[in-house]
Length: 82
Image (tube, rainbow, N blue to C red; front, side, top):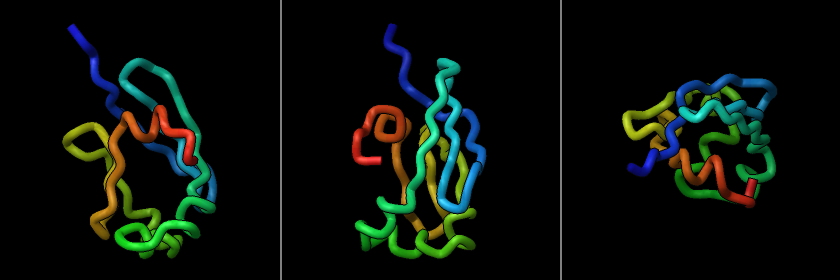
């Protein structure tokens, strides 16, 4: 049986830096600052520290923000773009 990646906890560790804890107990810390500067659209509101802080673990085990932006646990865990 395949176990899917899920974020179980998120901690903010800096202005645009988040620590993700996954269901397999692995962790990954990501600084989103450069990513947010280079991505517009739904991610543009997250350039505001106030908006960036409005994150949560969503029902699918990824991260979502109040502005509608979201990323899957697989993207957070495996992507090289961060």
